[in-house]
Image (cartoon, rainbow over all chains, first blue to last red; front, side):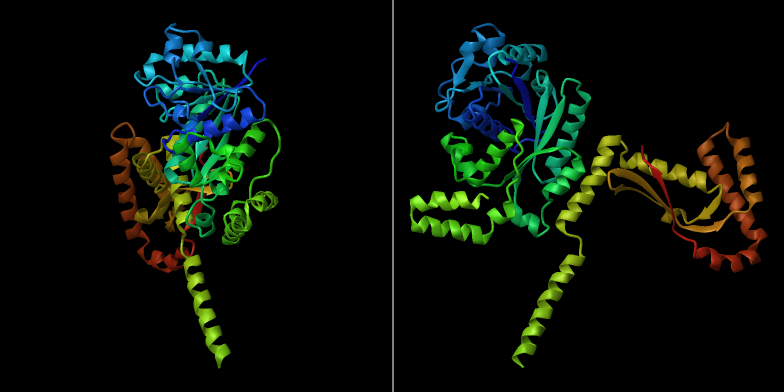
Length: 281
Length: 158
């Protein structure tokens, strides 16, 4: 088995790299794929929190590199899904604790046992970024429809294009707000795609559910009714090579849709699922 | 009567929205600003370099045409997939063949020394001479020539 190594990167911080990583990883694992996530944000680790695994970490990637443990010992299994593992970052060290060469070796080792290796990249374009992309052959560039995030994504795309090992990269546009786009107050997905002239892999709506799911340490893809969760599941399908149409976010977030959901909630829980399912199409 | 009031309100509301439509939206502003800033990021052409390029272009072109130097505009514009460098030159008057030759000769002579300042001076001198020589002719011509203002030249950036 040779797993695919995908780096999830953005340049700008706070656009949702780690959230994207946790959700795509969980969604792929739910599809029966063996997935390992590597947090390369040494000193500022957060992927463990989003997965609710912060109390289970014994060894980190630095322990592996410095040979205090074997690679397999450092992998933390997910609470729910045995297909999903995490290789956590060290919280007490800085980015120089792991080199590009070492990360590449770890990725090659993991490729033997896993279908997907998702590398969570730190913000910025310095050594941490260079380390994270070292072992990867694919990339997902996360951005939001904001000027600063798009500008930084453009920088990242330039750097990815210069890197021979990266065979393909695709764009994930996060925190999309359909009502703001409709009123021409926010750049649309098409605008961002055109400006960056990159291929798209996902459109994720702004969803308050992300905050509660982070608080609980449970990725939002586990919530069947969440719009962002469904969008992330579609991204996972596209990674697997399946063509999935993009959600009609404007219709999904319209007042009418919300009212229908409200009515469905009033009628009773049994009918909620059926109506929610019907609206997906 | 009732209908009239409603149509009146309707028109006012529609008019209000049309007004806001005509203005540049926040989204358009963001897109345009981004395109310019990304162009600079991608090519390392910062405002200082653009200004230098503008000055050099004025210098070069003023050998051949007389133009409104302050009104010359140099901007990046997006045309579909491609970025274009748009140069807008308000031409006041085309120079005569003799003047052009003169300017070129002078440039050749003075090139070894401080090229930038010297050629500039030379250019303005020839323009002055020019004005004295064909003062009468110019007045007649100028009105016709003005209509040819704002000739756009575009050069592909890459």
